Structures are given as structure tokens and as C-alpha cells.
Image (tube, rainbow, N blue to C red; front, side):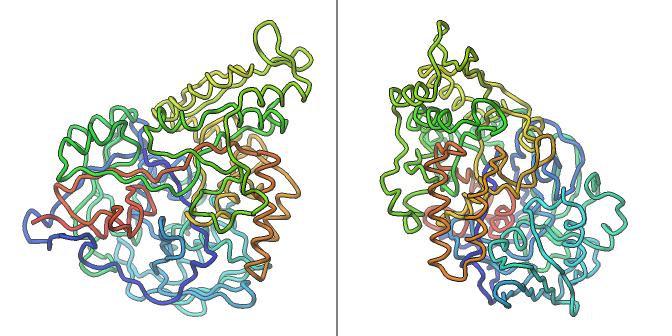
Amino acid sequence: MSRNRRLVSAAGAVLAGLFAITACSTSPGSSTPTSGGANHVILTVVGNTGGPQPRTFNPYLSTSGINALWGAAGMIYEPLVQLDAVKPTVSYPWLAKSWTWSNDNKTLTFHLRSGVKWTDGKPFTSADVVFTFNMIKKYPALNTGGIKFNTVTAPNPLTVVMTFAAPSFTQFFYIAENTYIVPEHIWSHVKNPTTYQNPHPVGTGPFELASFQPSTMLLTRNPHYWQPGLPKIYGLRYVQYSDNTTAIEAQENGQVDWAGGPIPDGQKLYVDRAPQYNHFWYPPTGIVSILPNQHVWPLNLTAVRKAISLAVNREEIDKVGESGYEAPLTSATGLLLPDDQSELDPAYQNADLTTNVAEAKSLLLKAGFKMDSNGLMALNGKEIKLTLGDPSGFADYMTDAQIISTELKKIGIAVTVQGLSTNGWFSDIATGSFQMTLMWSNSATGDGYAVLDSLLDYKLTAPIGTSASGGDYERWDNAQTQTFLSDYQDAPTAAGRQQALDGLEGIMVNEVPVIPLVGAADWSSYSTRKVTGFPSPSDPYDAATEGTPVGEVVALHLVPRS
């Protein structure tokens, strides 16, 4: 499963001008597409593991098959801008060819491309963009990024103007890349878009739905696509597997062309089987943490969260659970070092994440806990017994969870590992129906604010029982944190933003609202037997994940072998 749902900060990413995906691959030695069979290459892609899926193509709902489970929403629907996953200062004009901020970052103007059509042949205009944003404003359940704006208008068919009550450049990712634009001529007739299944999706993307079955679907080239000559591959066949193990076996046996998720001992079991074709690349673009539900005792106690952080062995999690692919985090600030080194407050230079069982026990004892006859820490006779739940199909997370359970037992905390269905897990974290879970952050290599905002911003979450809109699933509700987040958003200078970021780093170090573990890889493995053009360490034009929105950028670089 391609897990890392990246977040790229807009700070510094607002670049005007035009960018066009080249018609040929950017990788050395790429071949030129030929006629006949090469022009009809269909790649087999692993849909996010979880078994058969319903025919749901609503791109806004986390439980929608096309979005959360097939991971293919961005192949059909498109954003205004694409932001590079591995180069956070790089942005690619997409449905919008340029954009500008004005009025102290309280007005955002997009200039759209002309000649773009929907897959049903009707023209795409600014009216579609205005409709889309007004729709997500009217229905908060669709507003997964928590976008807040005053007005959105269309002065002409190719211009969109958004106004805000306060400086809003930090919303750029949510507005420009995290929001898929939908056709007004279809969605304006939908009575309730929060329950709309959208069985016949119409988008502006490079592919359209050709066929669907619960365990497989075929997307084929959109004949109306606005980038001439693209895509060069004919189609993508998504296949659902019941779990990661089955999907990995299919990759190792050569039945899959493109997938996400780690392959244990991938060099030996995947690459070495066909070294001229098989590759994987796992660049870190975020962090993985234990999310402790702040409404569950004793996870609402700082001392307990600090003790858990001290007890876990991050090196073991990386080595055993993540097969050495997700390096241990070193800074208690949650920053991804060394990428975010320039943003690290010198006051926390030595705030290292370490393993110290004795100190963890000491913290609990000082907080009033006592070790009872069962070997468990207890407060007033109440033992610490917790559940750590994640999808059973996430083989690496299940192993990580067992390691964590074993380590926390050493300090008197009993942890039951619970395997869930992928659908059930998504629902549980959205509504806060969990005690602890392992989860990746939104990501922004080189931009610490974006990661911390996604983890700590209470505006992104909701009360227990209500679905969170896109972050802070642990329900961290802290006034000082919100002040720092607001200060960052409103600061007119880089120095002011850094001061606010320093405050957020202090919250992470001193309060431990989440427990950082390892870097979150943008998982991707792929075969070049049929095509060339995938990103790689030597050609890092973006991450190589098949998941959206990155997957669309990659798909448009792929060139069939002759």
C-alpha cells in the first residue's frame, strides 16, 4: 500500500510561470514510443491492499475506493498545481498555468489553462473551480484540508480569485494541490456530495475509467487530455490484494509493474531477480509516529507519553519492522533531519530521541504510578493497559506494533496489538475511536511547519465521534499550540515564522503530543520491463509512488519500450 499522504508547504512554493511535462522520459536511455503494441502498454498497479472494493469514485471522501483504497483519484481528477514531493520549493503549473498572491497574502489569483476539456468533451472553465470551492465550503466533510476563505469568484472564464480574512499562504497546498476540481455540469445536480458514490467519474486527468470489478479496474488514456501526446502509455490496470504479503509476492513474481509499500529484503527478493528491470526507491518525505488519543487515560498525561517515547527502540523498529528502509528519527522536535536542519531551534539541538528504560520507569514513578504484582504500572489501583491498532494488511506496521508492545512491557505498560481492516482503521482514526495507532504524517521534505501543522492543528480535527477533516487525529487541543500555528500563518517575515516554528518545536519536546518514531518513506517499487521514465535517486524529478497526486506526474513521464 502506498501510505504516505504527502503535504508540501506552499511557503516558498508559489512560483509563477509555465511548466510543461516533457513528452519524453527524463531518465537516461529512455526510448521513443513506437506505433503498434508499444502504444498500447498497460501497466499493472497494486491498488491499496484491503480486498475487493465498491464502485465509489468520490475524490473527496477518505473512505471512497478511488481515493483511499485504489489510490488513483489523481489519474482521473486534477488539482490546480502539482507540488514536488522531494523538492519542496518546486511547483508545477497544472490546471492553473500561473498564480499570484497579493493584498498581504489575503488574495490569491489563479490564471487557468485554455483548451482543457473534461473526459465527456465539455470545456473546463473557471466556473468549475468556483463551484468546487464553494461546494467544499458548504459541505465541511469534503473540506479535508480545512480551507478557510471568504469569497471565490470568476472574473472571466480563465481567472479565479480567492479572498481570505487573514494571510493564508500556508493554505496553498490544501487549495492548489489537495483539492481536486470537479465538473459543475455534473456535480451541481448531486443532492448530497458527502454521500455521492460517483460511479461514472468525469475528470480532466490523463486517464478515464474503462472497466470496473471489485478486485480490478482499468483506466485508459483520456482522448481529450490537455497535454498533447500524453500519456504515452495506454492504460493502468489496478489490482486489489487482500494484504501486503500477497501483493509483495505478486511483485516478486513479476506480475506487477508498479506498487507502493515496502518489500522486505527487497534487494534480494525483488531487485536481484531481474536487476535490469526491477527497482525500488524510498525517499523520506515525512515522519511516522505513535498517535496517542488525548481523550484516553493515561495517554492524556504528559509523563506517560514521555515514558512511552523513552521506552521504544527506534533502531529496532527500522531494522526489523521497516527492513531498514525508514531511518530512526533523531530529534524530539519531530523535524526530519538533516533536511530540516535550518529550521531547528538551537535550544533543541540536543533534544535527541533516545531509548532509556530506566528513565522511562522513573518518569512514571515520579508521576505517582507504582509497579503492581502483575508487573504493570498502576495509579490508584488502575493499571496501564492500552490497545495499539493498525490495518492487519500493513505487515510492517504490525511488526512495528509487536516490537512496541514488547518494549513497553519492560516499563510496566501492557499493550494489545489489534489488526483491523483498512476501511475500519480509516474510519476509527477519523472519528477518534482508538487508543493508539501508528500513522504517517502529511509530509514536506525540508519544511517542518507542514509536518507539525498536520499533527497538531486542532482545526484539522473534530470532537470524538465526528470525522476529522485531515489531521490531528490524536485530538491534541492546546491553546498555546494554536497560537504558534496562527503566528506562523500571519507572520510577515521569515524571522517571524521561524519564531513561531520554534514554539511548535518546544511543544513537541516538552509536551510530546505525538511520539515520533521513524522517517515516513514515499514507498515505490517498479519494473522498467515495459516502460522507462520512472523517478530514481539519479533522476529525482518527483517521488516514484503510484499513489496520488504524485502518481499522475510519474505516469506522464513513462514511455513505452520499443
